[in-house]
Image (cartoon, rainbow, N blue to C red; front, side):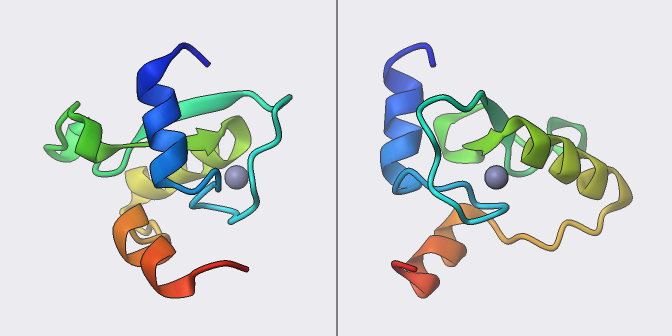
Length: 84
Ligand SMILES: [Zn+2]
């Protein structure tokens, strides 16, 4: 974790990984992901970033490549499902 942007992303995601929906553990390695991949025209702005577990990031990258990503962006997801 390297500072303010990660902290903001964590806060926005309510400390939760959008892929597996579990709360991040302090010991886990988190990676920044582009919600809409740059290869598909996504920007590098804060709004297009999210934090994922390393393993989840790998999964999503593969889904993005195949254009079958089953996970909606954080906006819809976290809003509707609420606290689990
Ligand atoms: Zn995860």
